[in-house]
Length: 366
Image 1 (cartoon, rainbow, N blue to C red):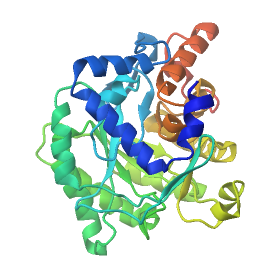
Image 2: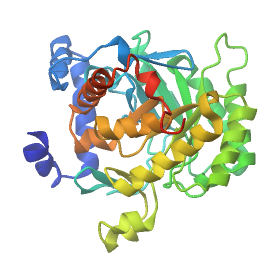
Image 3: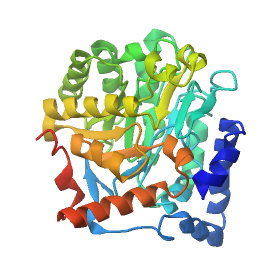
């Protein structure tokens, strides 16, 4: 019903306005137990699916299923419980920057085809202090919360690494893990930070921010799908040299041929494409396979890009991703998407005689 009736209506509304409304509706529901319980009805089976066979452990963080919300959906950290009640096992908040930032001029978020989006939001964020206040409500809630860290647009080059570390230090108590986002296409010069030297400096600053803490929170690097294999290998080298947890593959694509399939207007547009495009999905899957082939189980891989159902989720798991993130499909497939994917994964495992989802990780590469 969602895709037949509701989605076409939303297509005529401003995408960012609808997105903000959806997030704030979940935030509102969190304040009233009956409403929060009601959100569970938007799961695929009418209730949140819990099954031991779907549990995933990454860097000693327990996820009760492999489907999480990726950075970009809840930039403000206001709907963590609501999203968990919809069936997701975790939420990555942000991307968070040190100082408040409005991002790029509006309009800047568009659904250009069913399940396919383009955005050039540009790290719109209320800043670290406000995010910290927002996340206080989830203290000891038991839901894993990742913090995606980015940089303010106007930072001096010498401040970039320090600023990433400052965000991590301020949000240490709120985070289950940190994701260093050096791959968004919407901040000028940001993707240059994927190069070996600046990336190493940023990771060192984030690690240093946790000196003196009893627990060192896991750190991941989020990369762009356009990286050459040589560049990916350099990221792997930096990750290994710094002994951090792994890689998130990957961000939105700026590939003009992929964007151009939806019209010349989009081919020439700024911003990155995400969602249900087969070429984009293959690009990301191939990248994950390469990372897994190079690093095997030595690195944790979080897969994101074009996941919409159990079939596309399995592609990334079999390519080497242990944990998955969904963003655009929440709009394209509707609030049932997490439960639908998890139900499909479980049915596949039962059919194939798989006792735990981890048995499927990387089997296409192995």
